[in-house]
Image (tube, rainbow, N blue to C red):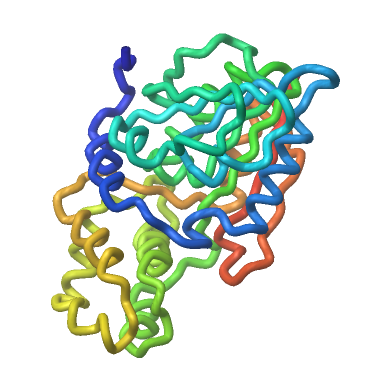
Length: 280
């Protein structure tokens, strides 16, 4: 049974998102990211023991990656539609299961895992306070010195400018609407520690681009990405984009930072990768 969520309002976003879940790098993990995840998983192993691993969400690329031999994998996601439509049916480790539950209140034993992995998880929680709560939840289920590997979606210390972003977009210098959507959210967040409501992003988008279909042929915009932004019109969920300094700050109470690196692909500075090691 699904435990009571600490914040149930955001679930509608993920239930509806599952219907058209299809992303490309860097929104989904790139090959470089997957090589990093696989190396991180190998680093989480305990000698001569199966890796006890947790995946936050149902990211198919991670679920089906080259896991260490005898990995026991459990995934946790609170959206039934995401589990039904995104969780892969093939290519998983021999011992793999998925649980419908809240990341902030997982029905897993204390110190029961060696390795936890996730992609963009902090952003989905909508605030730095909840990101901090997730770190505590992950620390609870990890053994001492267990590792948490996560690729983050991060805004720069220097804020992006809304007007500049739309200038780039409407002159054809920014054709990836999925990436533009995240950059716009970062600009709207500014220096706030809390995230940006999705319906606010839609309002700003609609004011500047009231007839987006007119640009599909001109700029090669993907209709599904336009539909994804339009979906935000009725959603009061929020996304948050921590800076690297904020990521390190929220990690400090529970984890040592074993690794922090920046991908080599374009805009990689917005997708820092962290390996956090649970403090003794």
